Amino acid sequence: MFRGFYTAGSGMIAQQRRTELLANNMANANTPGFKTDQSSIRSFPEMYLSNLETTKVPVQNGFQMKGLSPIGPISTGTYMQETLPLFTQGQLRETELTTDLALVDGALPVDRETNQPGAIFYTLEGSNGQRAYTKSGNFALNPEGYLTSAAGNYVLDETGERIQLPSDDFQVTKKGVIQYGDFEVATLGISFAARPGTLEKRDNGLFYAQTDLPDANGIQGVNYSVQQGFIEQSNVDASRTMTDMMTAYRAFEANQKVLQAYDRSMEKAVSEIGRVNG
Image (tube, rainbow, N blue to C red):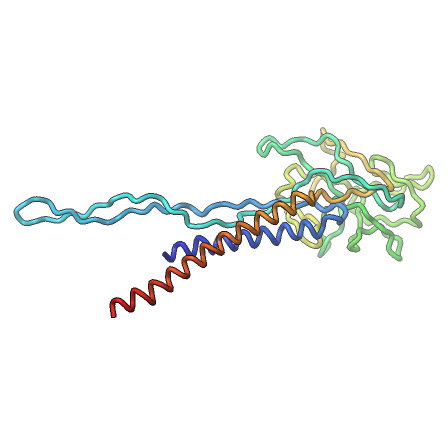
């Protein structure tokens, strides 16, 4: 009986966390460069139950031998194992702002073990000077003339230095070279992650790696382009997210009803069986 409480309770917790994840995706449906999070729900290892029986051996002394009679497996509940961002390209939206830069994926190498393509990112200065990475290119110039992200993080060039510009009257080539007329001022730092699923997502959607990611221009087979005056929108599928939220809510409600049924059974066992024995 108590195993049923734990199984239904774990299912409710898993669906609650999944609902929170989906709600966060929906809240960021209009956030530039946001990558939707996906969850994977797994079952705890099953328990194999057996019944302990005593068998009397037909001998003179009446020797008794204990044995096991198999009953079968029983589920021990579910849990949300992990969350992974989906790094597919979002749609581009034209803004005509020179500081808006969309990073467009081209042909990217596929990892042999995961069979998934890598991902490219803008390189930013994160917390404590650590490098951070983002797909969001809605940049701006701060009062000192440094190119920064929407959250205020400094955008870094290919050498890891901050990019300072005299004004927003500049051009960016498809390879990320910032120009004033015929003069090249800096080159945007574009990094490549062979396994983007290993990146840690924190700090307003920024991604962090255990070690600094390599320059994308130094990786064979990496192709991309930078579109000035555009931003990449989030890759959240709003209609599918709403459907998944309804499915998660119904699964939560089903586990809740099972839990209530167990509670009524326990109440009945305590009140009625106890009264008969009395």
